[in-house]
Length: 218
Image 1 (cartoon, rainbow, N blue to C red):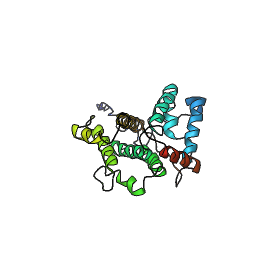
Image 2 (cartoon, rainbow, N blue to C red):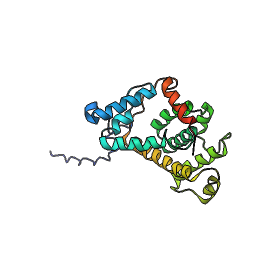
Image 3 (tube, rainbow, N blue to C red):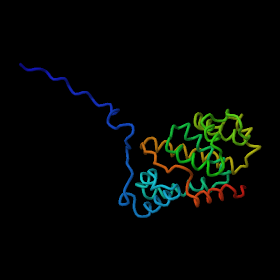
Image 4 (cartoon, rainbow, N blue to C red):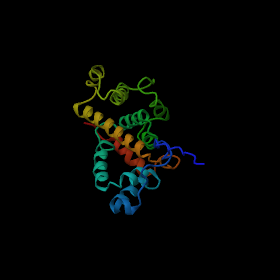
């Protein structure tokens, strides 16, 4: 007796990749090249750990990685905004995008440049949390509005302009956009958060962060 077999169901793709498995894994030195491998080791040394997964993953696109890294460094730590303000904005972007990778790295950096543990926690609540300065509150609102609306409202713009210079406003917009882009990439590739050492970054790295936090802002 012939029994008709049901046709196989088309895969939805939802079960093909476990949520905790990277879609593109970290590359070896051969995969990312000698220059990117050296950069990845240096970035790891600055956090007190090994080469970070974001570097060994994005480093697979060799030329783009190095060019993107230079752009990113012009915003953090090389931007004109105060370093503590920059880190606060990045934390809010990490929260808005659900990017645990960004959050874990930048909560340590935020503490290194002067944000308190309470301020780091309050970044998840956003601009409605008590204790922010006017600049901090508006920067957090900017991160929220650009995340949800992709443009600043006239209300926010009118409050922001008396406090931030032309250059600072331009940088704030690009800083938020840069870390939104990075978060989307990390989340999509499912880059696994690094196992960071307990405590703050190495002393020499903290010294560099404090130096950047004290630089004059134009």
